[in-house]
Amino acid sequence: MVDLQAVLDSIYKELTPRIGEGRIADYIPELAKIDPNQFGMAVVTVDGRVYTAGDAAVPFSIQSISKVFMLTLALGKVGEGLWKRVGREPSGSAFNSIVQLEHEHGIPRNPFINAGAIAVTDVVMAGHAPREAIGELLRFVRYLADDESITIDDKVARSETQTGYRNFALASFMRAYKNIDHPVEHVLGVYFHQCALSMSCEQLARAGLFLAARGSNPMTGHSVVSPKRARRINALMLTCGHYDGSGDFAYHVGLPGKSGVGGGIFAVAPGIASIAAWSPGLNKVGNSQLGAVALEMLAARTGWSVF
Ligand code: DON
Image 1 (cartoon, rainbow, N blue to C red):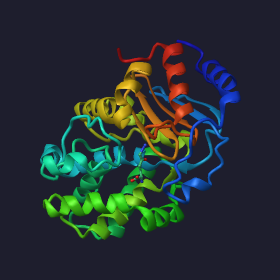
Image 2 (image 1 turned 45 degrees about the vertical axis):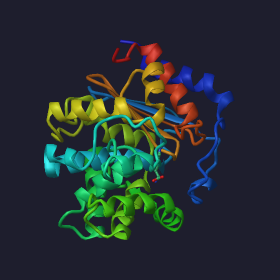
Image 3 (image 1 turned 30 degrees about the vertical axis):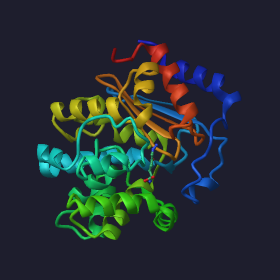
Image 4 (image 1 turned 180 degrees about the vertical axis):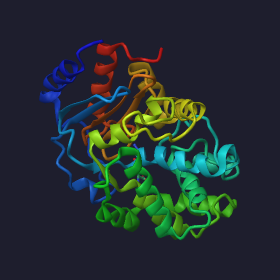
């Protein structure tokens, strides 16, 4: 086994001169305020060891990474019936694109583009008031990470509520096709709060460990999903987790992963470890520039690519 702490230290050292690269997401005003000069990384292995580098303990807005947790909840609720509401194919389009929805009868391509994630949130809301659905997700993530200190940043949620016109368009469009059951403001209220989950690299890697360990968290003993479901969620992350950058991420990193516009990337080395990298500057498709480079270095130095 490679010396993981030495690998993380070397990546951190080599990337330090590049911290600040990329462009911060500024379409959500509250996210535009973040200091770009931050970089962190955490690896949690299936045998329960934790390795960190840089700003691994600093909470950040996980944004679209939350879609993995909401997808897990939705599959737990309705099982494979979920796929009547959303597809499982890469979109090849931007995360917030509306173009495919009209041709495809309001059924989004996959659960990770915004339209797909909004439909997934609508599924989780069935039988719940919006506030309860937010509470359910927060409890789930705290349970996964075994950490009650995880919170939702209300300022970020409010900021996106005031400016998320594209998401209102996507949700309204899907509601017209009857693929959204709840009032658009309610669904987006939940969606914006899930995106505003605030977590550090270490918390994120702990929360996602079940996906690296056949559906159970070896640190807490909690059984979260079946091995088959964990495999399938990983398959979706590999093919769709980075939107129109998914092919490139698979090519360079070779691990299932999910990005967020807060600059986080969560990745899974199946059977080995869960990983989180964070740096706020984004590349042109909206994924963390340095986060992706760091994961490419980690995969190369550990041989963890799934290919
Ligand atoms: O809906 C949005 O636009 C954001 N709350 C989340 C987008 C996102 O994180 C895309 N990821 N790279």
